[in-house]
Image (cartoon, rainbow, N blue to C red; front, side, top):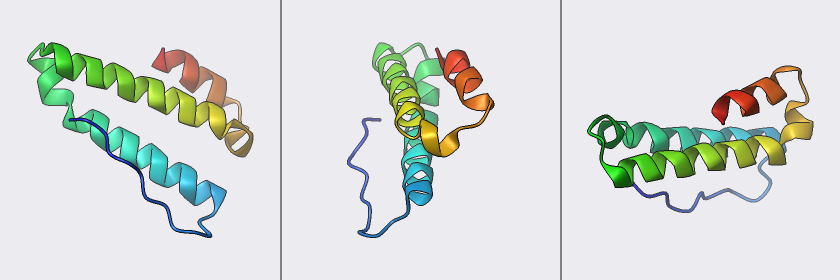
Length: 78
């Protein structure tokens, strides 16, 4: 499953924006799980893209997250 654009409303808080984007990425990754389990190369590719997008989102919002777990989570996602 390929990702589509995330739609945000004007005035959305930073925390809510991260929540929306993070959930969107995780849903797309979960939708690709059957293809990954079937060793479908496109499913694996889309899962890798999802992981990369999640790491980027965490990096972009790292000041908001600013806790001890952020570095550990990013490292585990690699």
